[in-house]
Length: 162
Image (cartoon, rainbow, N blue to C red; front, side):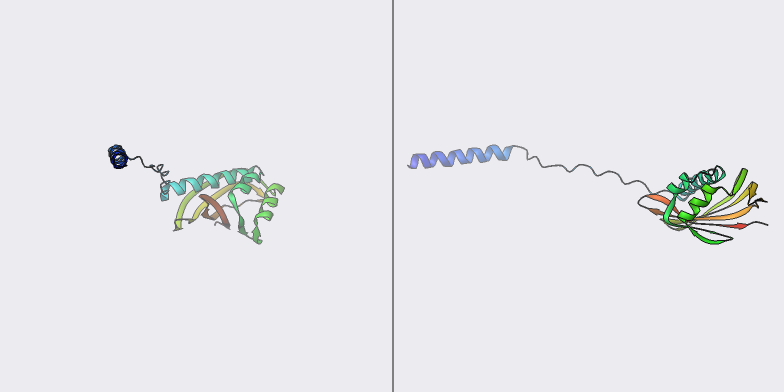
């Protein structure tokens, strides 16, 4: 019996030394995806200016689809007639009360309210008519918020320029 006990102890010691000599493989966590670098103010302005230009082109063409994709569900428009919601804005664009030949957008300025909110201001000069009257140049402001990584228009306002 002592013989088997010594054999068992020897076998255990041998197995222990073999296992200690092997490298222990631990699960290496997969590298986490690199977070997207924050957009600089210049990048945000470039993106929002491009969005505004697409929306003006859609307005000229009486196409509400780009507005549907850019305006937040709680977005509003502010104009001479007061405040309108997104659904009303989309209907007005599709109805096409304006006949626009061309337009020019200038004097862009971006004001960051925080890292996820910004106001883009600019001047729009329009060659066309709205309601049968010449469309005046306007000073515009569009407020954007970043939700879920996407910039959404939440408010747009226009004031006739003198």
